[in-house]
Image (cartoon, rainbow, N blue to C red; front, side, top):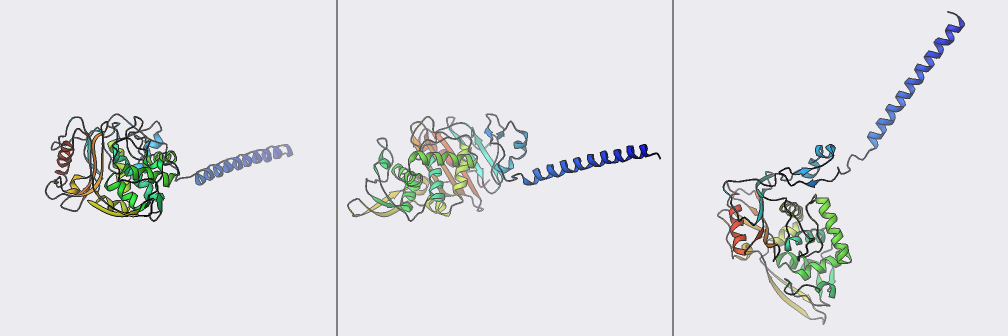
Length: 339
């Protein structure tokens, strides 16, 4: 082989070696990007569909990752018929089997509705997540700025009340004054607390909801869906205090007013199952939940119950024209949990 030929061969080997080095460097860089990516980051947000699909997304990767949101949750279409269940036409409703992860029945459960005081489930979640139940809250004028006739526990400016008392007044008697005092104490201002509420809705996947206050008093921009209420109640059940409080039928408490006097108050539950005004079907144990009523929202109830076999269910009826319709249709749903 001539010297010129040897030079050409050496040059060819050098070029091949350089190509191999470039390819190896590219492979290492790609592997580094994959390993250093945040595998725990959220997939792109979902939006509720108006069809019978639970989630829709413009991003196929997100569709493949939807178990991130729905793991251990009941999922189903907007309408899930059940031949044994018929409720009033104007209502939206659903029955969820917590143990089986099954939607037993649903009627328009992704439709936009007003939640009334069912809103207070989320207010309670934030109080339990970020509040100290031993804190003493001094009631301010902001806490009592409520429309005439609002449900209250009877607080006055200057009263000193424990957070634990406010939480019970919120859930048992649906006190709007308690809700606003909690919001101000946790958020600093009600506006900041409302921002926290909407952040929490986003975290829970409640993409059909937007809240403007901690009480549920009517606002056209304050809305939710039956399915989002299920998500909120399901989250609330992670807190022992919520489970214990929602089962209380009568609550006695003491607090100190602005003059330093000890006052004694007795509050009844707003849930007719708990007060004995309404009886559930045979072999059904109603544990509690959250009521709500406004002229725009109608009569509403999100309920946790247990069947004869110890299995847990969430039943939700929204928009009933009367209390009688509300509890009649709750019993229609509850009659199926032992089937």
